[in-house]
Image 1 (cartoon, rainbow, N blue to C red):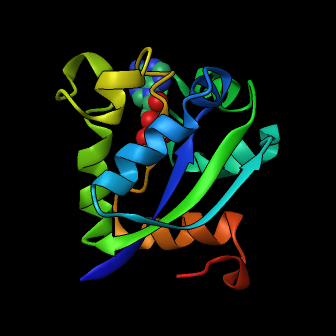
Image 2 (image 1 turned 30 degrees about the vertical axis):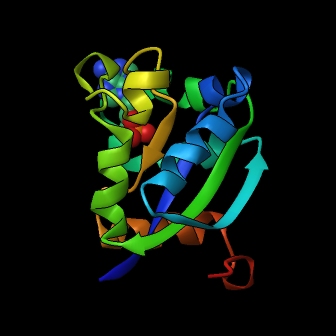
Length: 139
Ligand code: CMP
């Protein structure tokens, strides 16, 4: 089915001027960027976004990494978008990611792994709603 997923191009990607290279991989996979904006996350926004990881030992590092510089938040649309985008991203740890994936080609480490993608339809809807109003998404 046609789905929408939420994506973040993380500060390590904006810092190294890789947003275009990553968007090329997204579009090559058949996903359409139906909303996109560059923002500086506040600490509170990052904590809300990653609330599910609050108890993890890496939570502080995760939030710090996400507010270290601007990010690009996106809505991606396409067939099976959640799974398709997870495939394009590759494994969370770039050392374990397949060749040709965003993380294998561009990521620096598990923490600075260049991009985020929603893991399920319900979380995608919640994540999209945190960053975009309906009229900002143009399919
Ligand atoms: P993301 O898809 O944004 O979702 C949660 C993030 O936590 C994940 O990508 C990683 O960047 C980060 N993460 C997961 N495990 C670790 C870890 N061991 N140390 C630091 N960051 C981590």
